[in-house]
Image (cartoon, rainbow, N blue to C red; front, side):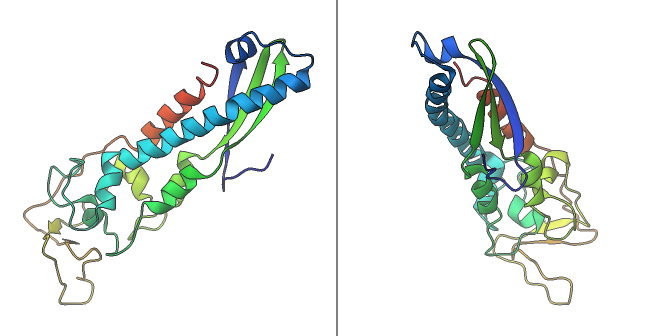
Amino acid sequence: MAKSFLSATQFVVEINQAQLLKDITFKNNKAITLAIRKELEPRIDKVQEKLVKDFSMHAVTKEIEAGPTATNSSGTLNGYGNLFSFIGFESGTDPITVVKRILSEKMTFKVRTIASGRFKITVYVPSKEEVFAVTPMPWATGASWAEGIEKGISNLGSFKFKRSGIRGSSKGSESRSGTGIQVKNFKNSVTFRNTPYISAIFKKFQKNLEKLDR
């Protein structure tokens, strides 16, 4: 079975045939396997749809999608500015679509008999590490903004935000987002508040996969 993802993770779950297929009688294992695949595929699709929805509806995702003039609806900056400007994304860029694309890729799976009436399902799923790999900080090589949401993003210098726009007048003072900039010794220094994000979404996703036969 081909793997859909750049670094697919094998998520394994055991299912009970009787619970999944109720009282249907089959003549051989091949027929059972085909029936299980037919029953599981829409269930896995549904779990994946929930994964994408959880990511799309997360306060951090929605705030970044809103761009450089958004409000800090996620509360990560205590209401000052917004994540798009604080992280330093370039105005006009879309940091979210690449993550949605990874999460939406078709998941493949294998079905293997392990005992009478019991089967092992291996589902090739995206991983949080893959998400971190495609979410680089605009200004820090090797760092991920998605991971930084969870573990912390340092306030280099001090973050100054102006919704009407900031225009740098000297080299190195330009604002990437157009509304936020790091200014040394700026009195309104912002403390970033770590927030459960990709790891929490994936933990919920894996719990839903464990319930495929329910």
